Amino acid sequence: MKFKFLILLLLPVSGMSQITGLWHTSFTVMGMSKRLDLNLEISPKDTTGWIKDPESKSAVKLPLDEVHIQNDSLHFSWTSGRLSFNGRYFASGDSLHGDFYQSGLDWKARFTREEQAIIKLVRPQEPQAPFPYKSEELLIKNGDVTLAATLTLPESGTNFPIVV
Image (cartoon, rainbow, N blue to C red; front, side, top):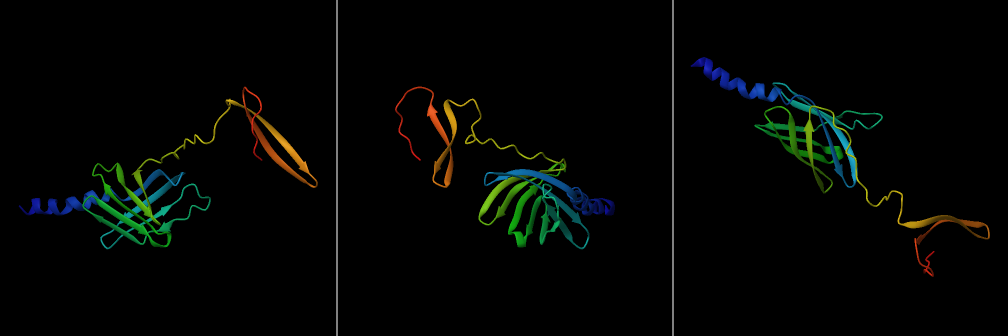
């Protein structure tokens, strides 16, 4: 009976050890694609961690001010960056899912053990050739001033209005 009680006491500790170590995420926020690394360390006295931007040349490890793990819930925050995360840890040890909050914004993130590629953004406002119109680069001189411009015209037709 004592042996079974000891096993029940050790189960949460062994499950928590699966959350320690390095995690990676890739997400988009405000039209930008970002990556973030998270490292968590659990000791009998404290739970600590840091985050860093792997895209940054300095790649400074920013210590987290708060790290709370309870059952399958995870919360961490970096106060000076006004960043916090609330999520869930999956006992299989393969992912953390949750929401980031920063300065009134919120977005979803999924951390995994494997490094994630930066998300390729699709920007339809940046069209690719061939275009359905004619395009011509112009230089317009007026005294000492020269304006560079792009003139675009429909493929067919004549007598079009112009705006400068």
